[in-house]
Structures are given as C-alpha cells and as structure tokens.
Image (cartoon, rainbow, N blue to C red; front, side, top):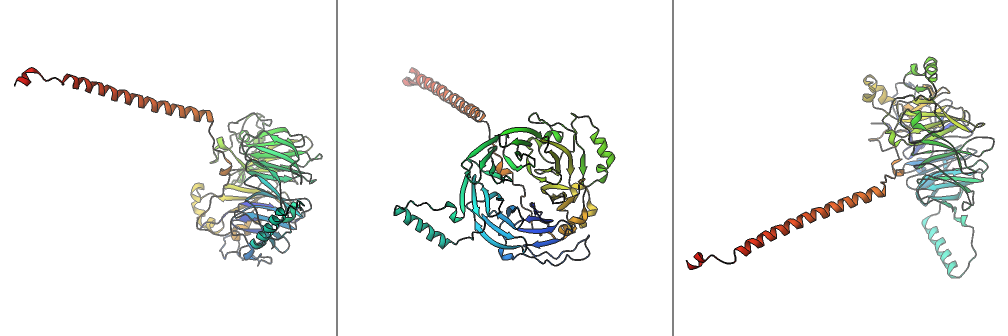
Length: 505
C-alpha cells in the first residue's frame, strides 16, 4: 500500500521543529536530528532499509481522541510558538499547546478555513473562509454546545423584542467579521506591526485593510490576471513591501502602502517557456537536481551561470501544462532572504532571492526533485524541507529499487544551503512518518480556484450560429414540405376529372 504524503508544512518560530500534516493528522519533527517528536497517530510498525533500530518512543503523543476527523487544510503557529492552530475540511479548528502537544480547545467555524493567522499578541486568530469572509476570533474561547447556542440566541431575540438597543461587544461570542470579499478568500497575512490585514481572493484582488477595523480600506493591489494563491510581507527597513503569486504563473512585488506594483517575475520565462506578458526580470539561472549530483557540481553551475543574460535556458519540461502554470505556494526564509516556489503538479522548485535594499526579486536557481512537490518550508537554519508525491519506479526506470522504495519512500527531502539533499535528516520521517493508505486522494487543490470561463462574446456568437443553423434547417424542411404539397396538389388536380373513355366504359 502507498504511503500518504505530507500535504502541508509549517515551521516553529522559536524552536528547531517543523510540523507536517497528512490527512487528518500531523507530526512534529526535530529539524536538527530528524526525529519524530510528536504524532496525533501512533507510528506504524514498519521495516526499514535505512534504519536498523526502531525510532525512540514518543514522549509527547497527543490524545488521538482530540485529533481531527477530516483532512487538515491549514496550520499556523503563534508568533511566540506557544500555540499551533489547525483547521480542516469539516470546519473544526483546534488549538494545540506546543510544549505538551495537547489540544487545549476547539471551535466550529462558520465555514471552511482557507487561511488563518495569529495576531502579534497571540490572543486572537484571524481566519479567511471559502465564501470570502474574514473573522477575528478569540483564541482561548472554548467551543459552546448546541444547547448554549440556542439559549444565547433566544436571549438575544428576547432582548430585541423588548427594544433594548444596548449593543454588546460583537466579539463576545468569539467571532467577529471584519473583512468581506465578493469571492473566495485565498490567503491573508498580518503585518509585523499588527496595523494592517492584507487578504487575497479568487478574483485577482489583494486588499489592504486596517486591523482590526477591516472596514477601513487602505489600498488595493491590482495586477494579477488569475487568482492569487499566496501573499507575504517581505523583510525590509521600511516594512512596506509585499510579495504575491498565483494562477498566472507570476510573482509580483508591491508597495502595499501605496498600492503600487513594483516588479513582475514570470516563472515561464525562468523555465524557458513562452511568457504571457513582459517581465521586469530576465535572468539565466543554474538548475539543480536532487537525484543527480553531477548537475549540481561547481563546474556545471559555473557553466550555466556563464550563459549570456537574455538567453532563456530550456530547463527540462515537467508534466505541468505551462499554458496553465500555477504557483501553488512558496516559503520565505528570513535567514537567507530567499523564496522557494512550488509549481502545481511539477517536480521543480524555483528559488528566488530578495534584495531588501534595492527592493528587487531575482531568480537564482531551479531545483528538480524526484516527484511532484506538494509543499516547502524553510526551517530556522535556512534548510529547505520539501514534501513530494513520489514518482513511480516505472517512470523513473529504477526497477531494481522497487523494494527499497516500498520500504522507505522519499516523501520528504531536506535540502542544505546549496540545495543539495541531506538524507540523514529525512531518514526517520521517510521510514516511520505518515501512514499507509489503500489509495491516494487527490492532493492538488488548485482546481477549485480556476474559473474555467469563456468569453461571453464567443458564447453569444456560437449561440447565434446554432440558432441560424436550426432556422436554416427548419426553413429547408418547410420549403421541402411545401414543395411536396404543391406537387401532390397538381397531381390531385389533374386526377379530379376522369377520362371520357373510362366513364363511357
């Protein structure tokens, strides 16, 4: 049976820990040793070709009864790392204590969350849902049961009937709507000074609002030609820069306080594919493969870097349809000021470097993994943790490694500063992490953001052509019927009077 890959990764802000989610569960992994520290699911008893001794017993194992019952979609740490928030498909959000890895509270959200963030103090959680609404929520408020909800609703209705207009704090019930988009909200971020809430949606909009008074709109950042999949504030002395990416295959840098687009980087150009628009960045970059060490040699890198600027490098073309190239997500490293970008259904990760003094984003290399990338995350040391959907042995032509792949599939790869694999850090999680399943679910979730629309003029033209064709066909049929009727009439007219020789007979 296949191993379920990890679909999301998030790093602890103050400790050397990353949390990886798989299905309705998650596991915490030490980024220094690679050991699994905690798991909402007991580790399966497996054999391993790389680890001869079983993993150490888990000291902190969360109560399985507190685990989610459907797929985890988003995770976020508080700024001090004391809490982890997880939300899943069934609209349940849980808060976890990251010292004991125990669930300290849960809450039913109004709708499924697409993104969530803690505020700077960590006492509030901001969540964006699939209907475009963004809520400010008290972190420590426990979930109330249905009886309490009904009693509270009845009390509110009684107070309204009595004409009591004394408005209580809207946040008393723990949920206060502060921003509303007209389409699905895709991501949100809070600025480091906690003054602004920046949110994105399926309709290519990026909205800059005051926090927590979201009705005060500062600016819109408009320029994407397809949905926006992720946004993040870039480090700089002025703290006014934002980076975004999405379904149009571009990264865009903004001065979000002015609502001004500063730079567009098209990944089609970086990958040697036709671009949809002119880009302000045109560079040739080296390609690194995690499966072939020779491609990452200094000589190879120097050779690639010596290509004249302006010449596009035709890096290998993965299975991605580049006419619909989608940037699924990215991770920003504060240590190296670099961004690792995930392309949907591709084995390639594009690495870009951010220059905070010049406010310029430039591509530096392309990393090729052994399978389709699902998520990436830099740890506190600048190493890149990647999760992949492994390619089959038949596709890679490695039939002799079938047994090894079955025992220790590479669902996680850790890359060093030069983006070369560190196998030792991924041994334990590849051998004992996640769980086996009968069949793999669809792990790519960008399709619901695609609009699949057609130009209304083209639809109208096709409709009119079909109408005219039906009318023409109906006209021809009517003319044929009329002609046949006239011919029958002439025949009948000629045959009304019988010939005299017949009558006389």
